[in-house]
Amino acid sequence: MTDTAPMVSVREAHKMFGDLHVLRGVDLTVSAGEVCVVLGPSGSGKSTLLRCINELEVLTGGQVRIEGELIGYEERHHGGHTRLHRLHPKRIAAQRSRIGMVFQRFHLFPHMTALENVMEAQVQVRGRSKAEAKARAVEMLGRVGLSDRMDHYPAQLSGGQQQRVAIARALAMDPEIMLFDEPTSALDPELVGEVLAVMKDLAASGMTMVVVTHEIGFAREVADHVLFMDEGVIVEEGPASQVIDAPQESRTQDFISHVL
Image 1: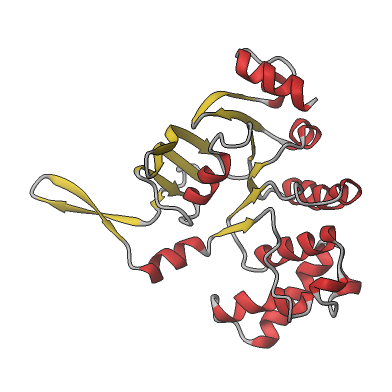
Image 2: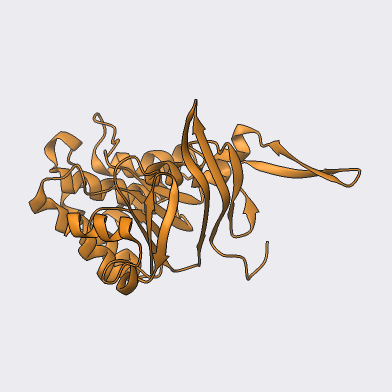
């Protein structure tokens, strides 16, 4: 681990599902404090890339490092050769706890209040006391604007409120990086803004974020780094002003003209 290592480094990432080659040699670097937005059509490999970064899917080839630390494997040296050995699931879980993830669907426990949902993983995974977890949950629900909804169950909350609980739950674990997988695509249009507002606030606070989204306005306003994926490769990347407003590649131009 070095001070100069990027927060996220993906090298030569390949992912096969049977005969389907979903990621085809993807390279990605995200610096600390940077917001990286990933655009692309359905089936382009965007969500798979996120799931490989936090080990929900295991790469077929290539590697992911978080601040220089290899994720999912350790390197062992034998007589001049370096071999990768799969880490024990407990060590992978410890690595994954550094990475917050927010999904398209909220995955809240229906029988728990918003407060209990945000406390649960803190107690079970981080080993915090209930009092400590509750204090952190209250703080994070306040941060996402839900102080008045803490005792509500998911069924009593709108989709936007449920997604904000999910963001609070991820933040309560003190992640070094947040991954968002189309966090607004399951929401009614009038609820999208409240979730994007929380994400903008998070970006402004300096959180490192990788966001898969179709929200072009958000990308334009917040992203330091935009990449356009299609058919498992990065077709084009750069600042939003280039990739969104002046794309060089015909596939990017086509996609942007459709979503705008």
